[in-house]
Image: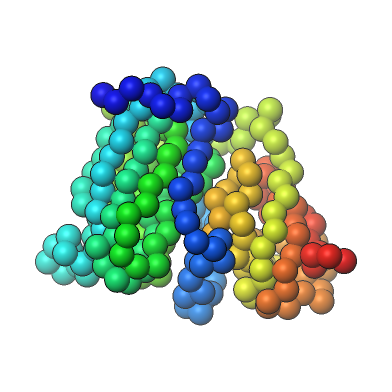
Length: 243
Ligand SMILES: [Cu+2]
């Protein structure tokens, strides 16, 4: 096994080696209907604070890895890591189309986005539990077309029921982003946001806003600053930037 490079150097130990603009995430999700991304991406495990080891996993993604009936796929589609291990995923997109690897079950969440061919990497620390987490391509419809897989941590296992964040976890998180859509009847907003430290990587996401009156006056294209309450996973304050 490769000797650890970063273990112990960072409490959060999440490094996103994503180049390009944080606004590069596609607008396809909004165009295809907002859906309930947040509910679909429930956190089921929390990264271990202090990694005990390191491994690098090479993956590829693209049409050439698709099996019969599929269009795109990741290869390999089952990856393994030890508990509490720092994992570097080095992913090559062999397609000229957009792909985005997302491993949503972890807190913090992350995505690895591609606008075309290339190699990118990211690091995260596995949870200190035997668990099986799913990953997929976050580009709309790609998961259904075959682009999904599993990360088996330790002996693997079913994710536990959704747990409340540990009491010491920071509750309020500040974010900035651009409004994609305002859905007052659903009390929701879709924002294309930058990384929210300790909560979520940069991505386009739908959030419930409470109270709903906070949505008044907001329009698509507005740059906003917002506050998320991690316990209820809702935006509890939002305002245009610079006002
Ligand atoms: Cu894809």
